[in-house]
Image (tube, rainbow, N blue to C red):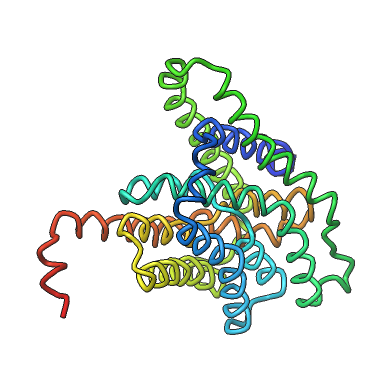
Length: 297
């Protein structure tokens, strides 16, 4: 019962509260940036919505993952970014406005694209023959309830509350919701510990490769287009750090398949390894700019 309560009740509510806080941090101007920097936004969105799912499929074809684990990995690649990617963009001194804009666009698109593409993925994996299916409109409504609607509610609240109240309350609310999300993930991890893959397993390798390769993809494409350094960092993080909470909610609540949710749960923990390594590399580069310049041909 505790595990069911965590996945069916606590996770959706905490996820909605995190998205609500993200909405409190957004303004209409954040979406207006798409007009001033369309190339950066199109690149980040294209990599998130198109390249990342294809990368996940390449890993599924490369690694002999069990079908349910493969479904979990593909599901991770379809979820939008979230507060975690915005946090890492801030920590690496990336373009936070771009990061927030990409997260917001993904939050708008994902409720409609995720159930459609994930339905195709389940068919390609042969899981639908066993009765496993993802009802499109039911999934859309549930994703809207825990992602887009809370974001819109947060933006509405931001417009109605005095700015000085937000300045005082928002940092505390962010800390509270982040702590709540971490607590739910840790509790889910503990409740499913006996069923999680071993530390040295194909699932662990797949999760780390998805995060690392997607960060390298975002970084390489942004550098190739000669974007400003802070935009390169933001796109690297946005493409590489996914919102595992949404993937877990789809697996546990919509599909009611804990076996599919184990890979997103593993991703939610292990994605921090490449992300923190990237953060330390950025901080080192900022402190030793001469060493970076000296290595250039």
